[in-house]
Length: 115
Image (cartoon, rainbow, N blue to C red; front, side):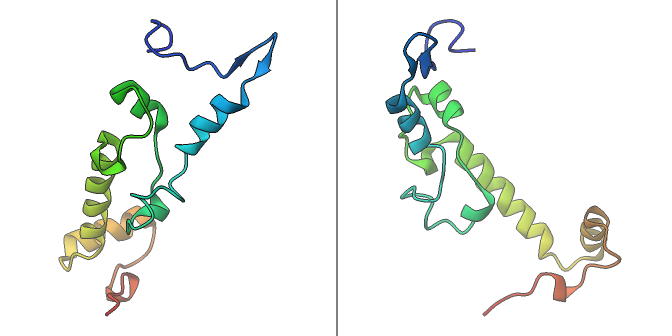
């Protein structure tokens, strides 16, 4: 949408000159969380990612510190909730998790606590 109204140029080249590898490199640098300095220490890193298009549309750039982005805040909240439900000890929550996962039962062995 931002590209269509001329606020952001998301082009990575054109037919005559081909792909602009520098632009692709800049976008790719923010597209993965594997080496992001904010993400490498996050417990949820393997389950998460980044959204450079959302960053561009909200902040006009892709180098915003991850914890300051809407995407990161939303996902941290979601992951916190998911793991809180997985580790609940009440039977209705356990029955729901078992049903969602298609398993017969959800007991302590399914979500061990490592000490």
